[in-house]
Length: 165
Image 1: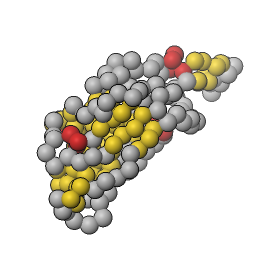
Image 2 (image 1 turned 60 degrees about the vertical axis):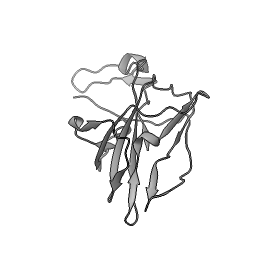
Image 3 (image 1 turned 90 degrees about the vertical axis):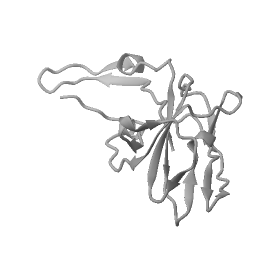
Image 4 (image 1 turned 90 degrees about the horizontal axis):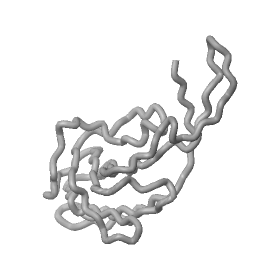
């Protein structure tokens, strides 16, 4: 599961190959301004072992800032899971879906192989300092609900090197 709420907080510019430039520190907001408008997307990959699995995306709940569980308003998928993630920024998008595949699926969807779903929530994406929990209700095998643990997202840091020629 990946949440699309990462942002750059610090960047360095320089030196150039053709024209030598000093290394200049920049605030991340210059390169990647934080998104302050809905929606907030979470990608979920499911890799079932065996047959008979179904997933009802409308049953997933997002808990942010002690609010009651929010249900997704839109689902994309099922779709392929992206195999190549070039950088951490690319890794924020787990699903290689067809954008024309939007649907408001709430009924259980059969999951027979490694599959990805993108879930849209109508809230401002949480900041990096905000912890939140995703409850994966709606996953079942042979009609019996599977009770997976809640997934806690907390602040994390990672370095990324990107070069633009």
